[in-house]
Image 1 (tube, rainbow, N blue to C red):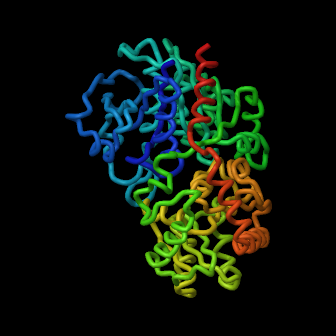
Image 2: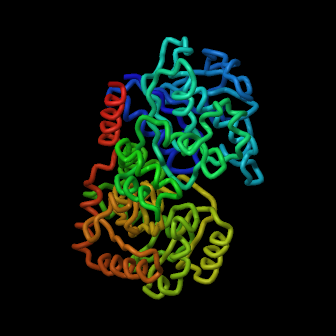
Image 3: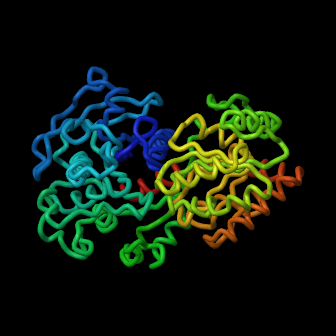
Length: 475
């Protein structure tokens, strides 16, 4: 079974969120499940540095894909775990500063439709009869809007053969562009309809994927149900209900090797479920590192997140007085909306030794917060899957989460964490109060930690589910 995993990012070389982590961890797990999978990803500067041209040979030039696309080429390399990579080399589109989607000034690249149109077009080309390489996929696994045109190209252009699956990691990002881009992208005129790529006068990459893919998955079963409702469907609920027979939810896993407190290179003290005393040592080390008072008599609440309204971090900021009065400590790591960044910095100044905020991202510190915190806060308004709650379970750090998406699928209230329903400060505070009260009951707390650490949150089960879906598509 030959599967092309098309993605706009892949950890650890280029990552803006959970998709990068999935692209870095799922393909190796698929290989363990017996799938012949190769990852198609743009040849960004980070990948160019990791796999320079002399170590990533070119296998084909792509100069006849039509439309307005710049000439490109495919290079091949292997990740350290052995996963084959197909690197889309197009310096005009991808050899740029900034992140994959934004320039250094923080604005979308104006040619994003062409950049990710090319990625989609090459994915479809690899699955077509025009591909004369020794390897041709039977299934193309697309991810989010950036590869959403691949299913459309497969259905609308001649000589296409592969079947397509698209995974929605976050329905809020839909890849919307002006109507004239249809011609630039080489899509036929008849594709411009409500049953094609048109979406309220715009071209939507994501809608194209949802319309033309042979199967649709989301990153958790609950999210698959939520996005079929008008309240959570981001304008796509009608289409998703129409395609409900092709829609399913497969819960993400985590990289169980990278997120293992017994072997985590980022931690000063290794531990597991049988050596939780070392977790307390990690807590003290974290308190010293971030400038909190070193106290083992106070619960330490951790946050590692994008600081956005979606993530519900404004609810946490609004509870500063209540958290301080519990009493408890709070450490926040993340970046995002400038108002929230400034608010958490202000709270750290008002409550020295009790609240600390680090703006930005630091991979090592993210691991040390998971290990050193007593509780982990994820009050998301919506969360397709979430990974940090699974990291927290594995690290014996019971999460406090809102009942949405993958959070609802992984955290069981009172068993391995704490769940609240309404996205309000009152509901969040009540959950934190329950959590800190349980923390003071050492026997109950140890049982909760043991349950979370015993759960299998690896990629083994999701990889088997994807392999079964690929087999169904191939058949």
